[in-house]
Image (cartoon, rainbow, N blue to C red; front, side):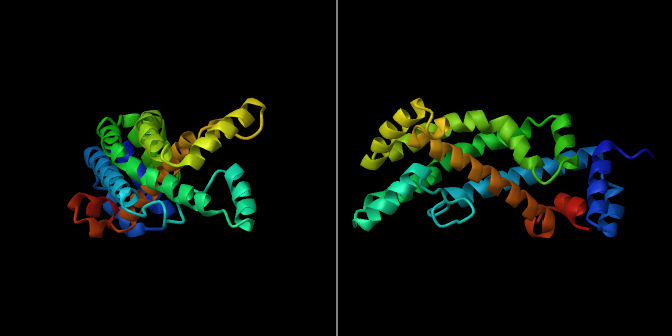
Length: 228
């Protein structure tokens, strides 16, 4: 029987990983099972990533996704600390990470809808793609809409910090003269961009963790596809 494309993609991955037992098992995986397994994996990864990042300290105390102050403020903070006036900068750094955490619940539905509406071409690209295939899929399907959802949440949080408003005025003027990054002319834009980067990074990590430990998911389908 001719092996379908989805199973072939999974088999190629297993062989590349040197997992002969998994390759043998995948010979019996149907196209429907491969697609369903992929969707289940990405749905689980989406929920896990949103829950992890949306929790208290999900960004603030996670070095993988922690959002630092924009470069311009980092330099100013160093100078102000020498004068004993670095507290405002510390407060702002906490606030921007809290803002990213607060925005995360907005992502859940958009991410899961993207998985539900996944096309055959999308699935093929993920199954045969590299380490960033999941990130690229979610970026292409959700980045614009997520940015629109995140921005007002982030702005509401950063507007409460006086230093953020001062930064916006100065950065906007600097950007108009070609100094600094245009996309960072408003601190809420900077935080939204960094929050999205953190989300897509965490999604890819959660997806990888599910593939590496499918037994831990309790899903028979994922155990069949990735269990080896």
